[in-house]
Length: 391
Image (tube, rainbow, N blue to C red; front, top):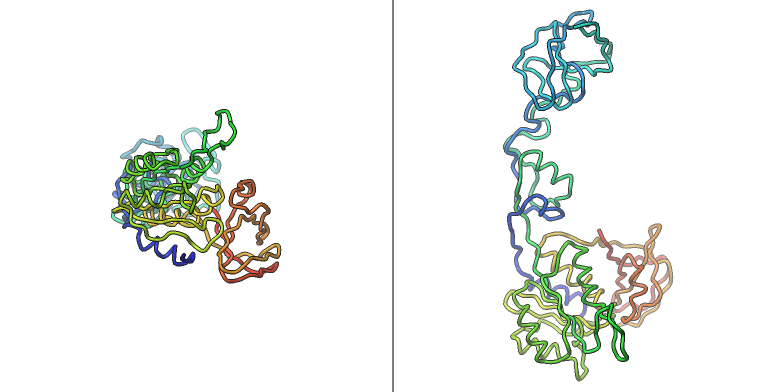
C-alpha cells in the first residue's frame, strides 16, 4: 500500500503528453490556448469616434468655436471628405473620422444654429473622443499568449480582430463503467436488495462540471464476462473510470479482469480514507482509474486524483488549493490521509458531520475537500489545513 503523495506522483508520471486541436472560437470557451494568437489587423482598424458628436480639426479652428456642418458619417460608412479648419462633420459612435480631423466634440456640448455648430466645451482637448487606429493592438502583435484561459471576453476580443479558429489543448475522452448487481436506475421501482445507482451519474455530472462530456457511461453486472466486454469496448478512451469491485470480496472482480484485459497495474490501495482500495493502471496510452463503490469515496477520488490527470491533458487548473484555519477541533488515527467534506466561510473551514464513505448528504452541501495528513492525529481549532475547492 502506498501513501497519497506517491499515488499522485505515479499518476502524473504516467499521464500522456497534451494533444492540441484547432477549434472554433465558441468551442474554445474555457479552454487553454496552445499557441500565441497574432493579430491580422490593427484594432481599431481606423481612427474611430468614441461618441455621437462632430469631428473637426482642433488646431486653427475659429476662435468663436463656430464650425460649418459639412455632412455626416454614419457608423459603418466611410467618407473621403477632407475638412478645413472652419468645418465639422456629424459623426456617430464607432464611425471612421475623416482624414485630417483629429477631435470629436460630444453632441451634448454643441449648440446648433442652422448649418453651423458652436462648441461649448472649455475642457475639450485635442484628440478627445477619438479611438486611435491600433490603440488596442497593432497588426502582427501577439493578441493572446499560449497558456491563456479563454473566457467569453477573450472570445469576443479575438472575434473582434477577425480570428475564427484557435489551437487549444484537447480535452481527453473519458468513459465511465459502474459495476454492481445491486444497481438500478432512479425512476424504476426499488425492490428489496437493490439500490439506486448514483456513482455513474455523479461522475458524469463531475465531468460536466469541468466541461467534459463523457464518451460513454455504462452500468454492468458483477460478472467477469460482462466486465471484460465493457472494459475492452472502452480501452480506446484516454481515461477509463470504473466504480466498485476493487476491494477483496468474492465479487470484487475488477483488478483481476483488468489484468486479463491487458491493463498494467501501477498501484492498488492507498493509505487514505475514503477510497483505500483505489486502483490505477494503464493500457497503452489509456489511463484506468478503478474507484471503490462507496459514493463519497468515488467523488473524493475523482476530485483528488482523476481531475489532476485531466489537467495534464487540458493544461487547465480546475480547483484551487488553499490553507485555511479549522473552525473545529478534530481527532484522527495516524496511518491514513483523510479527505473530509468541508464548508468554508469568513476565512475558515468547518469539518462537516456524516463523513462515512457511503454517505453523500454532507458532500451535497460541502464546497471543499479538507486534507488531513497521514501521521498527524490532533487538529485544533485555528490550525491551518489544506483544502481544495472549485476555482
